[in-house]
Structure formats: C-alpha cells, structure tokens
Length: 415
Image (cartoon, rainbow, N blue to C red; front, side):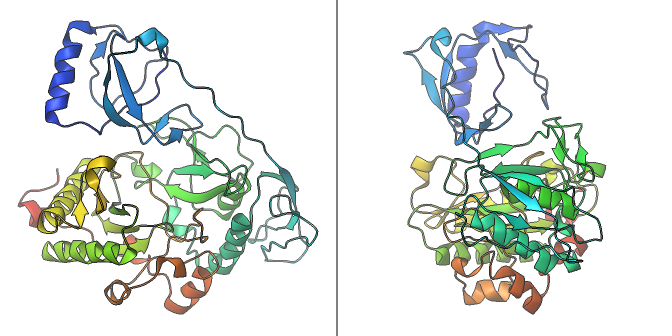
C-alpha cells in the first residue's frame, strides 16, 4: 500500500470512538505501507481491512491528498477494490525569458503578436547578477507577468522578500495558466545555482525552496507558481512558529462585509488579551489575521491560542461565525480556520499574487481600513505596488512585534 497522507478532520468524538472500536481487532505491529511514513506521535498500525470515504481538493505533486476530510466508512467496497483514479496529464507551453542589457531592471513586456499563454519576455536579475540565460516557463499567464512587474516595483525595499526569508515555501503551480488545473508541490527536484533549497528535518522531510532572495522568487514564478506560501517557522528554528494566523473563509454568498465584521470581533478578543493582530486580504474571498508570537514558541501553543480566540468569537456570534469544519454543517457563515497553525501548513504570503478571477493580491490592511470597510477587489497585483508606495509596508510589524504574552493569557508559561 502507498501512504497518501492523514486525515485530521471530519469526525467528532463519537465517530472517533466508533472507528477505534472497529479498528481494535485489526491492530498489528507491522507497518502496512511500502514506505514507512514519518509521524509526530507513536503510530498504531492496523491491517487494511476497512474502507473510508475521504473528500479532498486535489492530489499534490508528491502524491499526497490536499485538505482531506473524513466522510465516513464504506461498507459496500472491499480494500482491494480501492484504487487511485488516473490523473489527467497537464499540457505545458514553453516560452523563453531572455536577458536584457538594461542595468538594474526586471521588466516584462508582452509581444503584440503573442497569445496570453505563449509570450516572449525580457528579464534580468536586479542585484547586478547576470541571469542564467534563457529560462523555460510553463503556461505563462498575464497574472505571472504582472507579478514580475510588481516584484520590480517593490523589491528595492525588500517588501516582497523579507516576509519569506529563511522560510520553506510551498508552490501552487498553474502550468496551463490560471484557468487551467493547478496543483501543490512541496518537493524540489532541481534548482539552478543561487536558488536556496533546504530539507526540513520535520513534517514532510523533503527538499523545499527557501524564500528570501529575488532569484528564488523569479525561479518559482518561472515554474508558474503564482502564490508564495511560506511556513510559519524558519529553517533555523523549524519547530517554533514565529506567528500564527486565523483564516476567515466565507461560505458562498456571504459578503466580504461579514468577513470584516468577524475580523473586528477577533481584534477585540486579541486586544482584551494584550495581543496584536495584523489583517490582510487573502487575495481571494477571505481575510487572514496574523498574530506575532514571542521567540521559541512551539506550534502547539500558538494553535491552542488561535483555537481559544476562534471559539470565543463563534460562541458570541454563532449566527455569523463558525469553527465547524464540515461544509454541510457550516451554513451561510464565516468559517474561522485555526487549524492552519500546524507544522508544515501554509497560507499565501503578504503581497503574494493569487489566481483569483480579479487578479487579487494578498494585501496587508490597517485596522482603520477594516473599521471603515474595504472592497477585496481593490487589492490586486496591479494596485498593490502603488499602495506600498503610499502607505508603506504594513506587514513590517509582524517581524518587529513583541508577540503574545502567554502568561497573561493563561497564567502559565508556554514551556
């Protein structure tokens, strides 16, 4: 059998107890997988006898399930009848990036006679380094072109590079453009000189890109990776989160004004506990609120803090906010996802482009803007560079804030 990931949601305590009772007779000391997966806790192996139905968004490039949710046991299928469905192979379009002789510029210009997904562009590295010549890019889109221009507009202040410095990155790739099928990729198989790759000794344990340099940003863009999705920890202290986040995800039909309402309530709960939150648009439909942590804070403590805040908000405003994972039960509410704060999980970085229908970018906001109200569609890869020039780097506070005083929240030390 092949390991394809683990499921941590979709069941309650009663269902867990029921499944455990069913699994007890099949417990074994032998790992049933061809390759023994890494685990955070001591595993309890069972013989492959029961079949469960799992909902997930897609297969990753590493053969793992993305966002798996347990739906229940299947009694109409046998284990040997369960096979992985065949995947449709993606078609790639090749274009070339050619070095430009203009110093200190990274520009991208469309050929007038080219189609959106088949273009020739000019590009140079901007720190005096020469580019590696011609690059091959799959499924280049107008969104990626604009992202490169945004990089040039903002990189002189390090705005786009500093949030991801020293952090492993996950790629969401669009080899056939933003309208085509996308997939997540953790593992790096090849990287040119000057592009940093590290293997975290936890979680997935596979080589990954590490952010913080323009070459890495450009190379990932050339791989048609639109969003930059960094870990919450750095490679130097991989098991300690520098910050946590509450991901506000509205159900279909729920307005962005409702999302802003939930953000304000979260801000109030953070204020009451002496913590600060930094909001940013997700670049799609929702909002992220990041909370800086003090040094050497383990992920599990940050996760618990977010769970407390999310639970309090949903108890006070049950008709608007929910922490219910099941989409069927969630209803027309704003889902507060605190479970992103697990080692190896990621969210799109601040200032990252997103593959939304309005070419959104994940834009930091001020709380004054949240109070006044904003339109998420106003923050795009075209408008964010000018916004940075006007309001500065609102995300810098995440790197300089003191962080949550855990002893004030619980009366106990974090460790």
